Length: 304
Image (cartoon, rainbow, N blue to C red; front, side, top):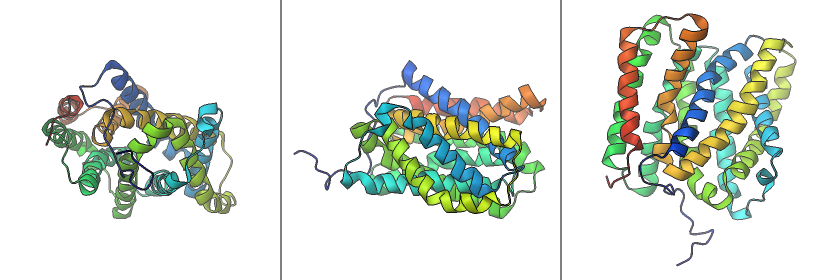
């Protein structure tokens, strides 16, 4: 029987349940590299800009960058606009604001580490909506990856006075990302990645505009923070999100969150290369464990 808008499922599976191909790893690498640096850009932006300004600017810049592509302007059916609105508010606007607020209280590195809980949150929501578990490889890989990121985070957790409020902000944002991952597949299969992300970021821009305008009076124009937010918006919020939803549409919501295990690795690598940070032995173990979990997640999906 044909699927109508009223009977269309909340979430769905990827179009490619097999082992990751070269293209899947390429999409994963692009998003991981860009998002691995995003928390640093937020921290730089906070030097002179209010959280509301950063949040509103990044979704506005993201939508504007995608608007340049003709395919982004494809119309969305009225019956699917509630999904677009939910992604825009819960999965785009709220996390943009919450991460900026969080990094006023916690280290950018710790914020990046906490994003590794996205796969767990996504699996919880997928099971809640579908009543089906991911394959055994995927469940094992998600658990193993989380252990690896925990090892990666040990020096940061031990050396920073983490604010409970900052951690709570990040965890709320994590569930916003997870809900978006659940809602993406049917929309991506129907419209493609660009319209879904562009229109959801238009919704987020409208929702965050009052906070952005209000924050201008207490913000200062400084080139480094403004440039950081520009890069964060165009690449981290616009292009990277379109690439990410393409990956989720191909491999499914549970496996598409694999980027969350690479983000701390990228952030750690950037710190060593550009900031002369030292890698602890436990972090090397964490990298090996996280990569092992990632390999399991990338395997062909089997019934749980």
